[in-house]
Length: 110
Image (cartoon, rainbow, N blue to C red; front, side, top):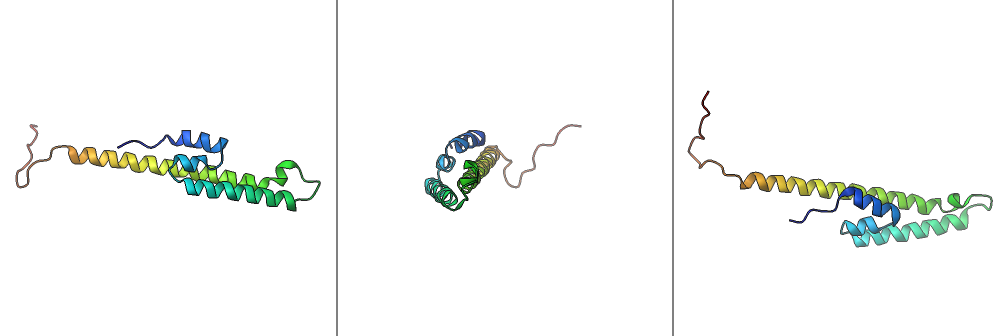
């Protein structure tokens, strides 16, 4: 079983490119939705912001969606990594030999 990407790698990519964290988490449609909403909300806040508002204030809607996409990508990557680690530990535990049913395991000498 191939391990998922390191959550910190996904976080770094998600900070640089909105929606790419979801693509790395094998959720490309979700990433595309985040990108579309970031562009739409950014364009909406640019059109509706007052003229004296700073550039960051004008695109704050898009930046908010970008931040939420980054958080979502990291959280999903962490969950995927922990589920994978749990499955690896469970398969390793089930692969270890166990005593046959009805037989007592050997007792340790005290």
